[in-house]
Length: 183
Image (cartoon, rainbow, N blue to C red; front, side, top):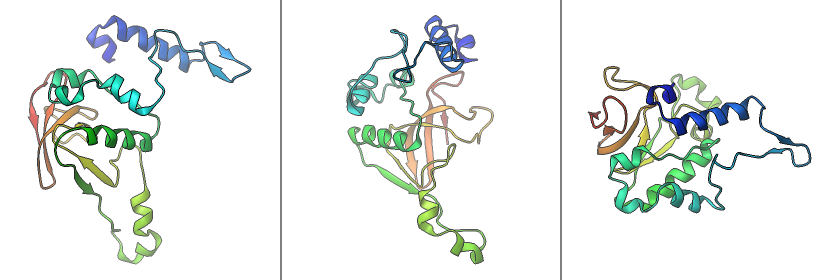
């Protein structure tokens, strides 16, 4: 849908390549049990640090540039990988990291023995933030639940502008309301 709306030919090619992979139309090597990705599909790097530097070069000078930031993202298959990469990138940004922890209790006190705090804290559910969410001013985030339907929708990319208690003020990175501030 985004490829059609933005009418970006390179995005259209990439989208078709993803569909070809998903539909099993890419040559499969029986010996290695792997597929060969098209040459123009991606850039292969050796380490996570190389990946971060390739996607976010000169991040110290550019992380406040919303146009630069809105054109970059690292996707990962597992939440644990996303959390590690996010933490590594945030360590490189100036400022203090702030930690926000989820609630460590059950609604029914009688059932608390069935759900120990360690178990609740270890849950890493897709579509939910991690138990220990660590953020800095200037950190890019993705809106998981739409709280302001007039400006945002699930999946809107934002950048943290201000943190007050448990309220984040953020700027929308892309789309019709790019540059608008939301709470």
